[in-house]
Length: 86
Length: 421
Image (cartoon, rainbow over all chains, first blue to last red; front, side, top):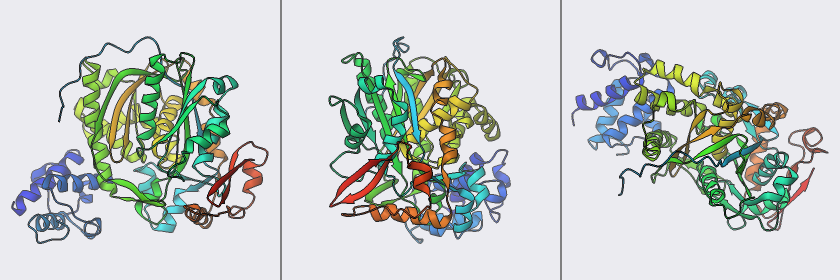
């Protein structure tokens, strides 16, 4: 699975959580919060993506993230076996 | 795994069985969630406005799950009820004993008949719902036509460690009297959908320990509402229009924000609403159910019924209206079922005085809160323990003396002691 595939999964879950979001316009350098996701939305987006990707990342690692790029990298690295808590 | 559709059933029978009365004991103490968030560095606005938690009910030093259960049920029961209750089930995940059931103390202190069957059940937050359904089935059997059943959920949180869950948890006892003449809500017997799924989301692997993965639990809860609803629709056996079939909806309340999410999930899927549209739908159909829960914090299995009480008393619904109810317990078991409200249901719920009981709790400081929660830990598994009488000055006089409440007097050589105040 490529990094782009992981990004597509994250964006799909974000679009489900936020009204009126055009997936094509998502800028990965921005945060989920900047797209209007609140704390529960973020849990749903991140957990939903992890479930779909069949990976599990400790909450402590997730708390360090600042933007979508960081999340995608963490999920992708974990999926590839390079990250933590596969 | 068998997953075929269940056979279609006829509409619920005219013979009503359901909730005849409700009693709630929301503890002696309350902590303002703003005080907790300030002390723990949590976002107060998020907890109040997104998670829908304003206060946390806290047990006084002379309270435990037995006193919560008894003090919830006692004011609700008439002399006639005491004669007719032949089944008592107490649901809890906070039991102080691994063999002796909480129900044995509750049976004794409520003065129930010696021939009243009693036992304790556990299935996280689902236990009370499962117990209610079994009790309703027993009543429906007609084996004991004059009997009533009493189902009580009693629990307290174990999280007071600064984690994010601390702000959404609480403690309370909730008692349901079930009968064949239900004055609050008749169960739509046979109309229920269950979805059981093994998961270790939230659990208590040792006395005094509550742990797990809150995010996992959130997803399991949200999966459950869809699976259980689909199973419910199959059982009903006729088209179910989410908009018109239910006048209102109640969802188990670990915290209000998750209850809201469950409604958004179904409303978006069934009605094709946007998120904003579903939120407006929730405000009309379900928000009133959080009236009391947001003042207690998560009270485990009793939360679903406290939410029903809030909805009946404060929602725009009345006799003859159908309410869809979703229950979820970690571990896990989910159930979606429905009830039809009785005429006069609001008055019966109002008689329980839930709002005034919440108002009567003593607001405590963070220092007092920490001390009270430490006292709960100190009592856990203790061979000898005496509840401190000075953690909240004047509490005994203001809340117990002469008020006929059951109080926890401590533990002597593992024997628990109780007395009437």
